[in-house]
Image (cartoon, rainbow, N blue to C red; front, side, top):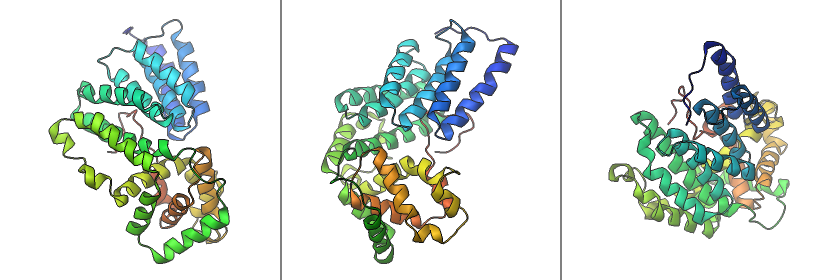
Length: 319
C-alpha cells in the first residue's frame, strides 16, 4: 500500500471531509457517505491505494452494509481487501464487514471462511483496548447476523398494525422483560439457531482460550432467553434509524414524552417499517420489539440501540 506523505494543505482539505464522512455513517446516511467518499477519492487523484483513501471507502461501505445495500458493499469490500496489505487493520476491518454482508445474503459457506480469517488475524490490532473492543463487537455482530439472515423473507405475509399493537400491550400487561425475551427467542426460525451453532463451531472456537471463556457455553447460548436477547439487540440496531432519527414521527412525540405516541399506533408503525425493509413477517417478533421499546424513554432506547460500528474511530470508547 502506498504511504505517500500528505502535505499540510492536502490534510487541511481532507480532515473536514473525513469528519463529515464519519458523521454521515453515524447518522445512517449511506448516500451522503458514498458521496463524500467519492470526493475524497477525487482529492487523491490517481492514487487508489493510500490508506486514508481506503479508510474513507471502508466507512462508506459500512454505511451501505447497515442500509442493506449489500451488492454494492460486497463489491467494494472485496476491492479493499485486494488493495490493503493482509496484515493491516484495514484488511481486517474490510474482512469483518464482508463477513457480515455475506451472512446477510445467506452465503454461509463463504462467510464462515472470512470469519475464520478475521479471528485468525485479530492480533494484527496492536492496541489491547481496541483489539478487545473490535473482537467483542465482531462476535456479537456475527451472532446477530446469523439470526437476522434466517429471519429475512420469513413470515405469513404483511404485518397488521392493529394486531401488533394489541399483542404488544398484552405483553406489557402480563409479561416480564425476561418472559418477552423468551417469547422472542422461541419465535426465531430454527435455521437461525442452527446457523449460529454452525458458525460458532467452525469459527468462534478459534478464539484464544481466555477469550473463549467470555462466550456463554453452547447450551446456555441456545436457551430461548439468550436467543431472545441477541435477537432484541439486532432488532433495535436495525430499528434505530426508524425510531431515533430526529425527523421521524415517533421520535418527535416520544422524545417529548407526549402520551399520544403510546396510544395511536406509532410503535407498531415503526416496527412494521423496520421489519418491512428486511421482509420479516413474524408477528410475535414484531410485538415483542414494540413492547420492549415502549418500556424505555426515547433517550434510553436510542442510546442503547445506536449501532456500534466495526469501524472503530479513535474517540469511540464504547465496548
